[in-house]
Structures are given as structure tokens and as C-alpha cells.
Amino acid sequence: MHAALRAPALTLAAAFTKPRMAPGLTSVEVRRALDDPRALCHRLGLDRGARRQRSGLMILCPWHDEKTPSCSVRVAQDGTIAVHCHACGASGDALSLVAVAHRLDVRRDFRDVLSEAARIAGLDPAHLRFGAPTTIPFVGRRGPALAKVGARPATKPSASLSLAPPPEALDDPTFAAIASVLLHIGRIDEGPLSKDVALYLAQRKLLDLARAEGWAALPASGKAQAAWIEMLVSVFGRDVMERSGLLWKRGSALVFAHPEHRLIIPWRAADGAVQTLQRRRVDTITDKKYVFPAGRPARELYGLDKVRTDTTFAIVEGAADVLALRWLLSRDGIDATVVGLPGAQRWDTAWARHAGPRAILGLDADRAGHLAVGGIAHDLVLAGVAHLERWKPRIGKDWADTLRAERI
Image (cartoon, rainbow, N blue to C red; front, side, top):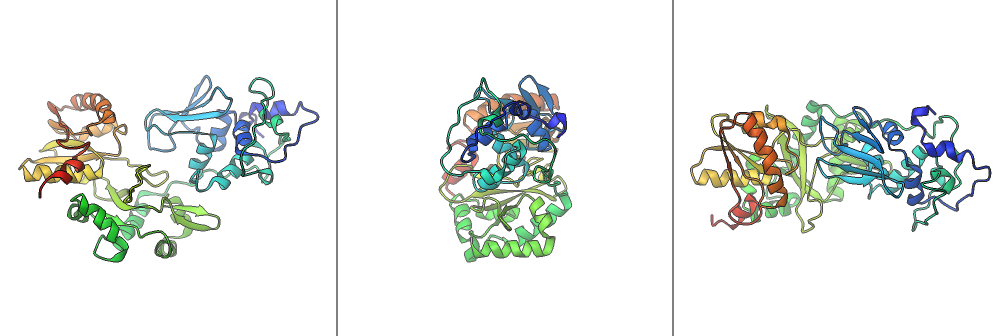
């Protein structure tokens, strides 16, 4: 193994002449064995453009698209790797990095994630134990991680330790072609496949607006989703569909990533081409309501294809708020272009170039929206905005809440 890829634990473990063999490896031991942030990031192909820091690296965040590294990968006080993106707020550990680099879900695909992580650490995945983890004491201060579990260090690369780089990202035209198929077959109509999605939008008074925007619905998980996957693979090929970030590998099969996120929202580039697809849950579960395909976050504002420089430039959070504020402004006879951020903390300075001389900051009436206003306002003024106003929803947290409360 190349010296740059060798974790310190591998060298130290060789000094133990009688390693203690553990009855099985747990996720705790695997996490402890992965105690070199630089080696792990290199093996996962996440160190391109990274900045070295005292206890690790600052890398380009694998959870969202960015040009300046903002994701810290470091050794925490317990000797394991801790990950935190200061831009999008994503946090995790060594297993989280392995999962995102291989387009896996750390919960749903835990066995596959742990097996890949074990191989990177030089451990035998056949010894993994997936029951309740057993804590093995440290050997020394943050001592030799592999010695803790009696693993023998690898002396040279082997096929079992070779880890393929993350799949190459899919090009925009091909993704747009896949999106056009999904948006067509998933049209929100009166049929049974989209009935609950249509009801969700209708209750929020967004149904007609969403239909006009080309929003779509994924059928409920089961036979219908399986049939869609079979059709997509037959048209575009398995490799392309895996690289799209829309599907996950589940053993030898493919399944929709986040199958319960069934509302499909197209985010378009300035020329109208679909750049990515956001999906939302329509049930009552509030945890992680919105998702983007793996490796394909929003690179532009929602509604960018409708921007006009001769009108007021209004910025809100999310696609639903764009539709809601558009309707409210139109009702009141106010001419404005409304665009949406993919999140309060996901502002890109380059987006200020789309604004004209007048702008409105209509971010959510919550702490995240309040904290984001100052930085966005600064960028807009530097870009030439002469008249800037801060608007807050009259009712509720956001403009969708306000629209829902309106009598129409």
C-alpha cells in the first residue's frame, strides 16, 4: 500500500506479536480502525481540492455542490472520525463518508456500508457482527486501532482491498432525459397512482400551480415503483440509472432512493432544462422532508428559467414558497420574479447576478431565515441592488402557510 494511504494504525499494529482475536467485528471497531481522515478521504476520492488541517482535512462537501471546501473531516476526542459541513450542516462519521461516496444510504444499506468500511481499514468483512456492538478498550492513548480487534495489517494491495472510485456523475443532458420521462409518466392527474399526492397539494392550494410547473408524482412503493424501474433501466441502462442518483442498489436489485418521497419537483437551469429533481414526502413524517438525488444537489435557484431583470427579484425558501408567493403577488397586482433557495443556508454568492435594481428577501420567519438574511443582503447590494426589502409571511412560518390560510 502506498505510504500516503496507510493509516498510522496499520504500522503500529505490526508491532503486536500476539494479536488478540475478537469473536467478531462490530461497527464500533470498524469506526475505530478508520482513524486517519486523510487516508480515508483519499481512498474514497474525496480529497481532490481539499485543504489540510491540523487534525484532518477540509474537503468539498459530498452532500452538496460547492466550489470552496467547507466540510471538516477530523479526528474527534474519542479517536474516531467526525464529519461536519459548515455550509449545509450535514454531519456524520467515517461510515457516513463511505456511504455517500458509494451512493449508499447509511441506514438502509448498513451492511454494505460497514463491509466497504471494513475493507478500507484492512479488516475482513467476513468477521463482521451486526448485532449489538461490543466495546473493546483502547490500547494506549487513541492506540493502534487494528490491534484492538486483533486484525493483521495488510502488507500489499489486494483485489479484496481495492475500492473502485465513486461512480462518475451523470451528464446534464442524460439526466434531463431521464427527468422528462419521470415527469411525463408521473403527471399529477385524477388517477389512483397520484391521488394522495394531488390531495396533499390541493389541501395546500398548490395543485393547479404545481401542475402548471410540471410537478409529478412517484407511485407508492411496491409493484408500481418496480415497474417504473424496469422501464427506466430498459431505456437508459442500469449503469446510467445508478449514476443518476435516483436509484439505490439493494443487493443485486435496484430500488428508488427514498421511495416514500413521492412528490417530484423539477429544478431547472436558466434555459429550462431540468437540472435536478427534488422529492418530498406527502405523509405526516417531518424528518428529512426533502431530498435531492445523490451527487446532484440544486446548482441554481428554483424558478431561474422565469427570471426577468425588469421586475423585482424576490427570494424565498423552496419551490412551494415560490408558487405560493407568485400567486399572492399576482392577486395583489405586484409584478415580480420569485425564485427559491434549496435551503436557508444554501445561498451561493454567484446567484446575486440574477437580481435587478430591486429585490425582496422573503425568507422564512424562523431562526434559519433570520440568520441567512444578512449575508444574502450583502451580496445583493454588492451586485447592484439599489432597493432591498425584507418581507415576512403574514401567517405561519412561510408563504405556503400564508397561502393555505387565504380565502380563495
